[in-house]
View 1 (tube, helix red, strand yellow):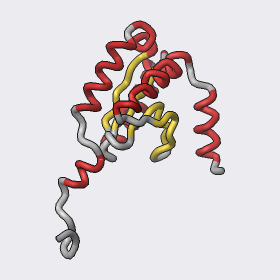
View 2 (view 1 turned 135 degrees about the vertical axis):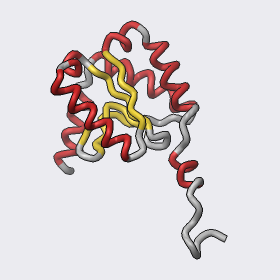
View 3 (view 1 turned 45 degrees about the vertical axis):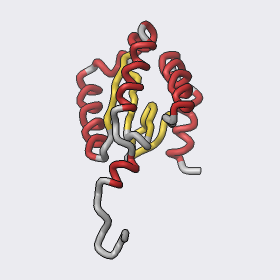
Length: 132
């Protein structure tokens, strides 16, 4: 196993209470066809939660994300992910603790209104000599 995989596994085992609550709610979306992974390594980052099919990243932000240095880091990270076609939603711990229903309604609405990776590929015509 790579150290990246080992670190992701360790992070999964030590989720914060808001992350654990978010995860339990995101897992319920599988019945609707939305599959999330947690602490997924991608481009040198560990994504709290990601639905690769819909190119959606969900980050659960604690107090440290309000510090200037972390805000700059998060902006760069979000820009890197956007360049790869991902949308990033950020929710603070209090929103997950106090308004998980509203948070999940927002997530589901975003998922239902986002193109899937397959539909993005279908929008690109095949290369010469491919297709029909």
